[in-house]
Length: 294
Image (tube, rainbow, N blue to C red):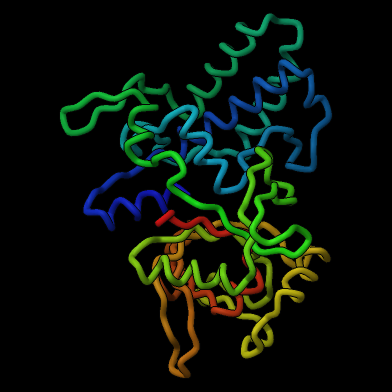
């Protein structure tokens, strides 16, 4: 979602490079405080022995930066990359091992651990000879209600908002439920109007190949129906795996339409890290899409 916000600013002639480490830290600390106060998290989950995680949905990032603000990437990032699997396990263990301390002592110990793992947080944001708090800076890069979260499933009425029932929706964010034709139109309309779209969906299909830079369905010439989408979701064949940023539209030699996506898995594929998702892949495998309100 940060990449989508950054690209939206580029399209407006602005340039921002935001800190994912800052948002991740705020999210981790929110979970830590909740578990300390509720005395939960005593049993390790299947998440590599950790009960605290960086997993979530794209809309949760907006909630986090509206609450805690945001920093520039240059001001707050781990140069060699933060090992979040290790950090998650350390935090989960720290929550268990500090049960007899008072809350302030527990929090201070865990903040010190994160300072060691990621780095100390700057108190202010400095940009273009101006000084901001993280919250002030966040309001300048992502306004309230700037993005609309869309989904398309039939177990809730169309035209209503509902909290999407996927494991990573920890904040119980709500999504506007629309028919799949409407969702596809909004995605394409946004991209053709010069706005990026944050796409969240299934990347576990055999036809999704990062090395080839292409995602297609087995029967990619057949247009998926609303009923097929619903069945795939209810039978767990469509799962909430990954987010990418849709930045363009392309066609192959046969005239088939693809959405061009920026991915976060590095540049080691035939398109320098970009992915091309077929129109029908997006139609069937989208969990949610986040578009700029116009």
